[in-house]
Length: 265
Length: 202
Image (cartoon, rainbow over all chains, first blue to last red; front, side):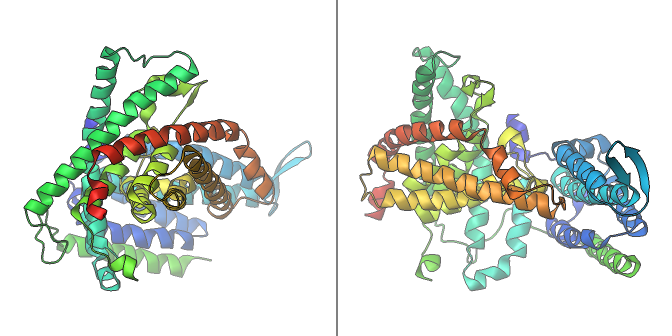
């Protein structure tokens, strides 16, 4: 669990998708999120699905991993589907159960909207599976770089995110340690009446806060000692490289947009 | 304008990062402290950390800390409740609650700041209750709009129905807010005593 926190849900690999520049991945997804709404008939949804599944295949990530990403939204998709099936009254009547009737238009609409949802989640899951949070942070920092001109603290935000990602596992360890230390002093972390539980949580929170403040101060001192002066002219440990494949993927999603626009009804 | 141009101190950056990390712990505290599952409901300490972020960092940096928390979650770190994360979280109807922390931290920070450096317990309780109210307000509206927009929910799904779902956890959250309001000053004071954070400001 500790390890999974650092890398997120990243599945290590060396596929074309893994090696893509995070900026290219973000741009592709950004465009995709908009063009998903262009699809409105069987042909456009089919093309969109083929495109999405090709990306999954290219990433060489087992389909089961991608499907696992869909699990948390399966309920909302199911509800959406049922709402449409029961509430949309268009086209021919397919079934009639008592006063309930299911229309062809309802089923179609239900399938389409659910598919839209699933495809969106699938592509974003794919990003999460093939890109570490730190890569995404670097990518976003670079893409939003121009916003520095209007005084959006892009560099600072990215740095704070890196610090946070770096310290989550440390604080998790710390939490465990404090629980053990306080248990040794007689605090009951396993149960007891409500008021005792509240007392127990205070004995965890105060040391946790103090230690994280100490860490923050030490890190800040270390940064200042090394002459940290903000983003200007700062060099990077992790460099982003834009390759021809990145341009290719970007072109592909733009072609997809044109095709969808042409075929939508 | 002056606020945005203010120079960031290294300590601001590290503290904000630390609070965002604490939010991640708070969201899943029950995996270390299983005794916080009370009556089958896992309790998260997010509102609590959110209020303290506003109180200790001030409204501006507190809100920044919550933004950082939201962003690392979106970028794929499993920092949200049940260790979820990733861009897909946006389409979850509950994402509004994560957004609401930003505003809740700002408002609670503002309430605590009115306390002139020595906020009373009552003020902390007022702040946590306000934070919770903002949580509910933004969270529920987001949920409603999410169902309405993305799921294109038909007419049967009304605004009142969305709110009626929120009535169930409401008493629990009010009690927790009051408790958070009682605990927060202790943590707040212990930080004030130990850390040199505020000495830099003064």
